[in-house]
Image 1 (cartoon, rainbow, N blue to C red):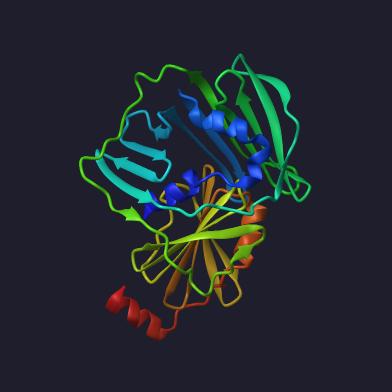
Image 2 (tube, rainbow, N blue to C red):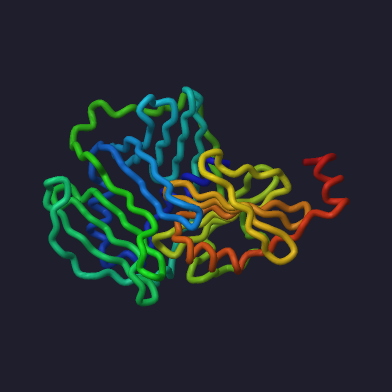
Length: 305
């Protein structure tokens, strides 16, 4: 399931809302470079940060750690993850995202980043600045992305610490076998709304004993998993329990990502997204609320979970 989530959150087709900066985005997707990225996020549960290597080659985006023990490769429709040499892959056949025009783009302003000429622009939603992009003038590569909360505070700062147009030493992930595509289902679970806080439900995919539904507002992305299988939070970062009505949520922030899990009886749900905390909280409020397991739910899980 992890490869499917990565593919959805990272590489879905660009929506029309970014039409005002379409040319910049196209250039960024075509740029080839390698470098080191620092992601720093200020979350309600404390600071989160991570440094890793990135590259963009032949239309694919690759991220890996220094030892190359873990790597992720994402290209249009294809996601591959490698852990200790074992590769997991998913081909995602996605529908086009349409009608997502909730953002406005500012005029570009000149800047300098890493000693390179750059352009900066701001994306706003509902009159609130949400994203600041720094784009390399020569290649179009995105050098820095800052996302903001509703109060104007910085949520995440993703910035290149080094930039190199030489991609000759970039590692490569290659599959030795064919992979069956993950095709969208005809319908989403009835419990999920079609639109939540400006996020549109685009596609729903099968996962193990459940579904993964993909929402986007055109920039930020959210995946909602519904299954009867137990769900695990990411191992890194602290897990916080938040009481809510007849149940509770488990929440974990990682650099650039938040994961929330909860139960509705025997049903397990998870929300995985890159959106700022205030947007995540509003989105979560429109999803099915948690309900504690009953005795019969626990028996079901023991027998069939």
